[in-house]
Image (cartoon, rainbow, N blue to C red; front, top):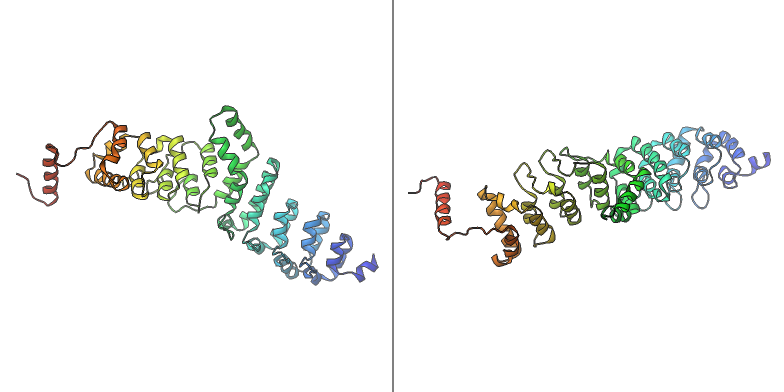
Length: 373
C-alpha cells in the first residue's frame, strides 16, 4: 500500500479502483484532486464512473475547498464535468447531492452540445417508471440551486421539458388521443410512475407574465409539445377555459402562436373554450381569421363547433365587419364561403338589400356626427 501511495498519483489510484489509498493520498496532496489523465478525467470524474463507497467519495470532497471546486468545474475531453457525468450516468443521489453542495456553481455548466445537468437528468427518465421519481429527486436538487435551469435551451433549442417530452411524447399522444377505454386506463397506469409530477416540478419555475395557469405556462414555451398540453389537461380539470390577466384562454394563445395541432386538440376535446372572449372581446375565431392566411381546418373546426360565433358577432357591427372581411380575404370570394354559412343556415344581408342600405347609411351618418333625415 505504501508503495502505491508513493508511486502512483491520485488519478492513477482512482483509475485502478484503489479508493482507500486514493483517499489517503488526497488528504496529503489535495492539489492532485485537480490532476487529469490523458482523457481529461480527474479523480472526481472517475469516482462518478466507478462509484466508490460513499465515505471514500466524501473524503475526496473534504480536502482543500479551492482544489475541490476547481476539480468540479473541470471538463474532460468530451466536455463533461463530474456533475454532468453524474447526471448522465445516473450516479447515486447522495453522490449527486454532494457534488452540487460542494460546488453549486457547477450546475450552470453545459456540455459540448449546450445541454445542462437538468437536460441529462430528464433524458435518463426513459429507464422506466421507477427511475422517474429518482430523476425527479435530482431535478429538485438542481432547481433548488438554480430555478432558471428549466428554461435553458441546448444548442438545438430544446429545454429540459422538451427532452422529457421527446422521451414520452409519442406514447402520451397515442394513448390520450385514443378513445378506447383500455388505452385510457393505460395512461392512468402510465402516470403512476410520477411523470406528471416531474413535468409539474419543471413547470413551477417557468414564468408567465400575465398570471395564467399551467397551460398558459406551457404555451409560453418555445415550440410547446402537444404531449405536454395533453398531460396537463389530463391532470388539471377546467384549466382549458381559464383566462389570464388579458382574458386569453389557452386556445387564444395557441391560435396567436399558430400552434395548429394544439389548437385543434383543444377545440375537439374541450369545445367549451371556443366561445370565450378575451378583454378585447375577441373570440378564438376572430383571432384565427387574423392570424392565418388560408381557410384551414382550424377555422372550419371553430365554425362547425360553435356556429353562433358568427351570428353573435353581428351584435357588434365593427367586430362582424372585420370577421366577415377576414373570411372573405382568406377565402377569396363570397361564393367560397357558402359552405360556411350553410353550416349556420344563415346568410348575411349585404348592402343593397333593402333595409340593410338604410341601416348602413344611418350608421355612416352617426359616425360623422350628423343626423339622417
